[in-house]
Image: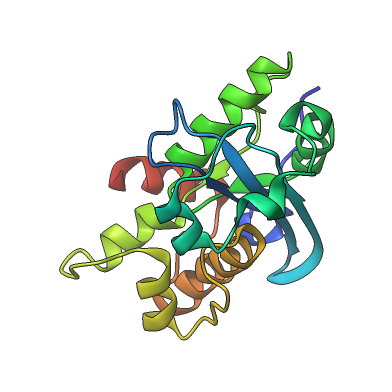
Amino acid sequence: MTHQWPKKWLDLPLAVFDTETTGKDPSTCRLLEIGIVHFEHGKVVKTFNWMVNPECEIPEDVVRITGITQDDVKNEKPFSAIAKDVRTAFEGHALVAYNMRYDRTVLTRYFEECGLKWPDDHPTIDPLVFANYFYKNERHNNLGAVCERLGVSLEGAHRACNDAEATGKVLYAFNDHFELPPDLESLLIVQTQWE
């Protein structure tokens, strides 16, 4: 089904998402948590959060960073039990993630294991691309550092919904501070050029 997207990106309904995983390699790590925050016109309208049983031990460094322990996920469902709900939460929304390549690779792999496809027909926006352009002389452009520069609150970093909500707010803040191109097509072209 082809979706008719608004001409102006600010009119797009956004599904801003984040994953917490067992490692840094998106081709092998296991999911621990998925957060999706729906934004409309800069406002949060709905939040989804799923804890996922990774069906493996969580490395200690991941526990230290995320605060997610084995006890937190041992009774949770595997991704296969929530895959359709996650995919449905993306429908009708442009997809936004901070470091899209990582989260997209993780979820694409999981979707494919469940016989589902990544929604390739949805616009995808990665605020990290804009951060690396606008702050090219800064040493760190991770989400926490960029939130601090823009005055965006990020409480409970490294938890999926908190990071997703902050990512959405960062995207809108970039528009306020730097005036991103207003047309969706132009924004996506600039994003490709700046990658």
